[in-house]
Every structure is written in structure tokens, then in C-alpha cells.
Image 1 (cartoon, rainbow, N blue to C red):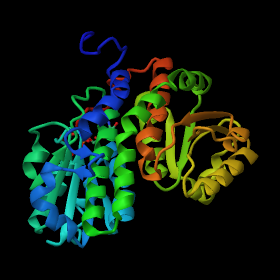
Image 2 (image 1 turned 45 degrees about the vertical axis):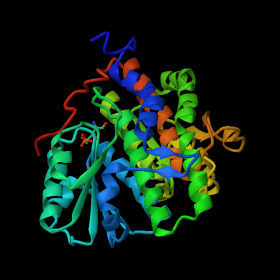
Image 3 (image 1 turned 180 degrees about the horizontal axis):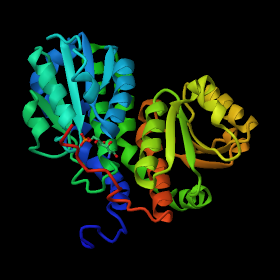
Length: 369
Ligand code: AGP
């Protein structure tokens, strides 16, 4: 086992640190930014269906569902097709309206999640096309779908999903860009620019990983907190959900992720000097709005930990701690912003003496209802 951990204390830490490579592996042979080429073998025979779909339905559980939420923003922004993101466990029992014109994407690291499999069978029985985004080769979900793309993240052993999440988003990003280009909703210049930016993500994630000692110091300060709030808007809303899920599953601290603007509709009542609030406040289209949400938390004496774009000075003046990540296109920020949140939950859990790789009550894949 020590050899498998490759010198790291835990699988989760190894997997967090593998992300520059796993994202690059996921893009290898698919993305050729210089020549403007994007090839997803699994899509080849289904591109027509995908392009002409009335609607994209994404179904998954847990972290994979969070990747699906990021994809909702990606598909709607780049390809202008309406998207619905469904918890597989709800979808399968809801008698949902599905037709042959729907393109269903099922996301799963393990490829064995019972609810996701059942959602696939249901959508298939209604005539929809099902595309799988899975990590484990030859698992049940890839066998149940019409087509799919593997994430190629390599084995993920830690129960808390990390590198599978960023690999899922990488595949979904490539799908959205391809779709947008084919449908003509993305101009050639914008498409080329985005491909080139996407190719820089592994090195930017590498830079983000260097924040580890800073994040560890923040973890030491907040490890005894009883609650955490994670807030973000737009593409960073799913990142907030994912940050909160990571923390609760491995450290057993109660944490909630919310769209930052929803705070005033309830969670703001929780804020006092005992409440750490993690903001994902990168320079994007909702930045100014998030800054005012930060001010609202500050006015109520909440402790502010903010993930910001390198060089940001505004938030620095407001937050108790800032974590600066490399700048990228707004649509690609989740791939980088989630990294310090993974590190934060990891360090807090270790400091609390928790079993990071095998948290209580959790299984790596949930093969029963
Ligand atoms: C994530 O850290 C979880 N342990 C869990 O939410 C997981 O993402 C979920 O069970 C879905 O698993 P899958 O991707 O293998 O289908």
C-alpha cells in the first residue's frame, strides 16, 4: 500500500496532487489546440444526435452531479442547448418527461452507482440517447450506455472524489466546446482561443497546488469550527457545493454550499464570528456581486476565506485569508478553484484525526439504493 501511495500519506493527497497529470491525460489525443482540433472518439457516431438534441439531461450522484452542474453552464453558454441536471435517485422515480430528442449524459467515476444505472435504463426505455462519462473502464455504466468518453484519470482510491471530478469536467468542457463549434454558436476565433486556454489548465493546476502550505495554515486555524459555509456564483456555485461536500465527508464538519446571492434568503442568519465562510470570488462576470456578498458577511463578523484571482487587491482588503489562483477563462475556473478547497478539507480532516481515505459510513461506490 505504501508503494501505491507513491510517498504520500494518503491516497486522497496523492490524487489531489495527480491532477495536473490526470487532466492532461484526459485531454491527450483529444485536444490539439494549435491545430484547432478536438476529437472525442466516443462522440463520433452520435454527434448528429448531440447537435440536434432538443435538450441535454445530465444525471449523476454526489461529486459527479456537481460536475454535471458545471456542464450545465458550459453547454448552455457555448452550445445554447437547454440543460437539466438531475440527481439520478430522484430522476429514476419521478416519471420524468423524456423523448428520443433528448441526449442524456450519465456521469460516474466508478461506473457502478446503482441510481445512475437505473436512471440510464429508464431514459433508454423512453428512446433517449445515453452517453456515459466514466472513469472505470469496462464498468457497468459504460456497458449500459450507447456511447461515451472515459475520463482517463487513473484509479481513484480515496473515497472522496478529487481527480475524477476535474477529469469529468475536462471531458464535459471538451464536449461543450465541440458542440458549440459544430452548432456555430461559438465563433472560430473564440473556439480557437478557448482550446488554447484549455491546454494551459494542467500547468495552472500545478501552480494552484503550490498553495498547499498556505491552505494548511488556514486549515489549522479553522479545524475546530463546527460549521462552514461555501459560497460562489455562476460557474463557481457548483465549486462551492463540491467544497462543502469534500469537507463534510472527510472531516465530519457540517458544511453547506450555496449560490452566494441566496445567502440573504436564509443562511445569512447563521453568520457570526464563529462562522467561517469560504468564498470563491474569482475575477469573472459576477465578481462585483460576490464582493458585495463578502461585505455582507464581513458586516456580520463572519470569518472570510476567499479564493481569488492572482493579483486581486479588493478582496484582500476585506477577507481574513485570500488564496490566489491563476487566472483563466471564466468557464474553466472550476478546474483550478476546486484544488485549494480539496486541500482545505484534506488538511482539516487530517488535523482532526479522521480517516481521510475511508471516512465512516461511506463506500467508494454506492451499488445499492
Ligand atoms: C464524492 O466525494 C463521493 N464520495 C460521492 O458523492 C460520489 O461522487 C458519488 O457516490 C457518485 O459516485 P460515482 O461517480 O462513482 O457514480
